[in-house]
Image (cartoon, rainbow, N blue to C red; front, side, top):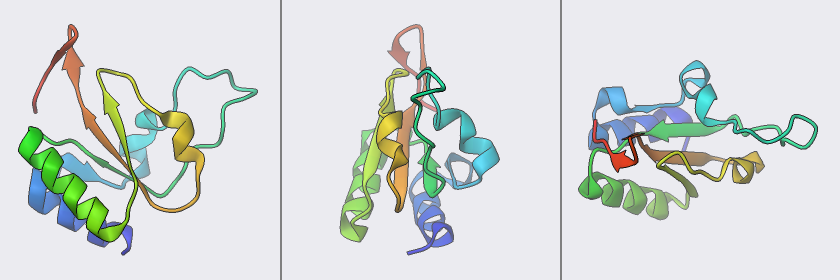
Length: 105
């Protein structure tokens, strides 16, 4: 399954504004504060999706599981960026937060 198909299916779940594979829109999600000398090169085949609630997260994970696409989560600003250096398709599922509490889109 290519990026366009993945994004299309995700947009059916979360809406058109909440899923993308455009590098310029997701670049900030692909790096962290790891020192430049040891920071791995981030993956480029990444789809960013921002679910609004647990129901959308469940649908995303079921779709990803059915297609055998790994998911990496970012919640409350904590993530696994180093894990995204592997080749192959990866997805980031994220929820934004303010003041330590969940903020839904």
